[in-house]
Image (tube, rainbow, N blue to C red; front, side, top):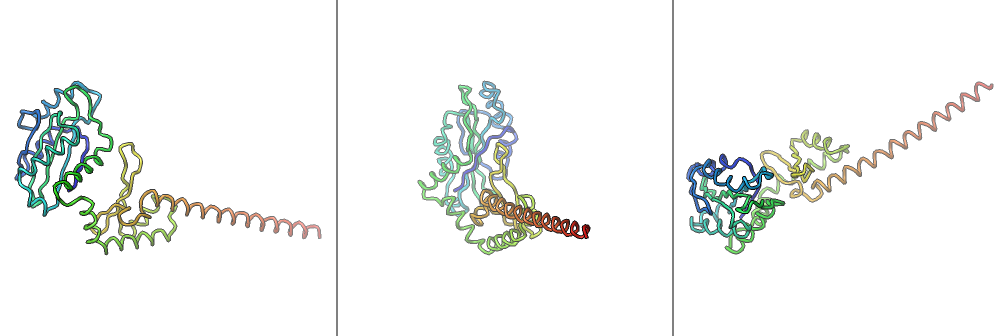
Length: 270
């Protein structure tokens, strides 16, 4: 089971998307009475107005079991998963609502929780995606459901040939001695692999994604040497190798120039 989470600002639109989706079912709610997206947003605002410094003041979570597990779980099971998730995340005292989607045989839960409590204090959303993933893993393990890491292992195993091809094209790109990350991305694109740079909330590069023939993988899942940190070190090493060779050529040029000048000087004396 996979858990994802983030802070959002468009509460009404998000809630109505989940509520009005075909085959959507409301699972449960805490401290809410409204029915529509605008209703829920107005109720959220009663707490959010107590803390106007917080802009992205609604939390959105998606809890997704595997297709096989989803078929086995009843609506009551999903309701319990929602309640357990909210409690473990420390949001049981905040307003929240959950909807179950069963579109395309893939059952999953959409959860919307007020980031601002009744006391006006904002729920800390640092690393919220990682925390929600960890909690989803704990719930899955307790219920005997497939863990996210097992799903990832299966996916990588099923796409072994694609992954091997991306790694090969990476090695070809590196043989061309890219000067920097942009140069590397250009070389990979020439080899039909699109490289996406992933940024953290602070704007810093946090990783790379590789897309090839409709398949997308984290660079580090293809090979540890392809993670952003390791790739950046390799690019720096290539640059350091190039600089000395340039300096050596320059020194050689200076020596030749001096020798030519010396020869000309002797010739002029004659």
